[in-house]
Length: 114
Image 1: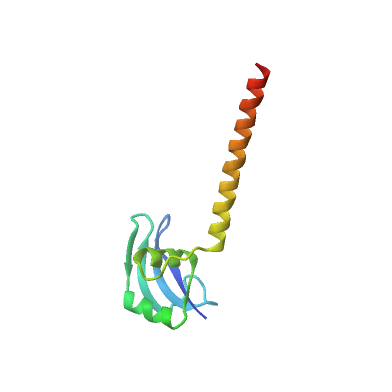
Image 2: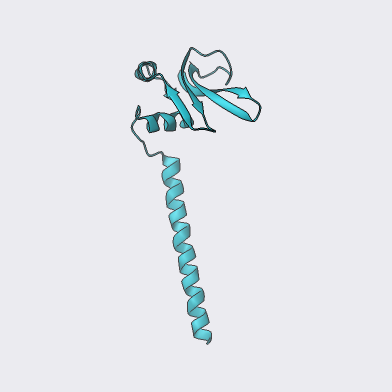
């Protein structure tokens, strides 16, 4: 299976990444099948070869989560709600509701004591 992933390069503690197509069993910094773009997380600079990316995606290449978000921001992929993100959001909402209820009960207890 072909994966679209990030290949690290650059100085120590100043990493930049190339977006590459490679086999899923190859190493992170191994020789890629094709280089498809560039991403610098410090400056948020992104350069993409859109034609090559579209052909790889139509061939069935699977992007990693980080590459998927980069492609969504650039408009090559439709935004997709991932289950882990949806579960995390519902969990946060439940925690907010519980905190609000506990604060209300503390206020009620203080008013009852006075």
